[in-house]
Image 1 (cartoon, rainbow, N blue to C red):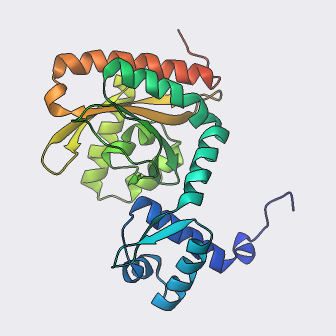
Image 2: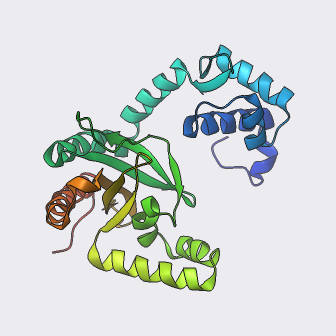
Length: 255
């Protein structure tokens, strides 16, 4: 069938849909057992265990430890490597993430919008003891700090959905933040990265050939290495990187 079905729900295979949901849960939060995984996907423990067993036999997940917790298996690694080479955005972005990371000496991340979520799809980390670690496959809501650049440049209906889900005062504050991000061209956020120390992240948008936002690139570093002067330097390097990546995706810049 070359065209989408009129009623997609009638074509969904429930067992496969639930199994893929389990894989996504394990990818985002490894180390849980059957009970927690069953709770998260809304299934019985018996059905969840059968699905996990099947996925384990195929190498998609692996079970370890006396508590029988689950993580991604070798097949998922193969899929991830294949996806990185087949997905044009990731394939094009990887060398730019590396170059930006080496120039700044800090962790770099590539994120895309997936529905109303922000999803990390690629990263580069420096070989230094104190650094910000990143996890490919990690999700955040668009209104959370990692997703703000994506939300600021998203289509109007996406912004309306997110703003409409918030209390009026919070929606007004967020709308002002999005205006500031669009005007400034990048966003600086501060958060905790290892439970004891703060990180500072600078993110900027990447645009495709249609002029729509395709992704965001962020540079994250321990706050101890990111005073205001350093932020200015990193923001300039980031601006050049996202411009190059946008050009590689076919975007025509306005001068």
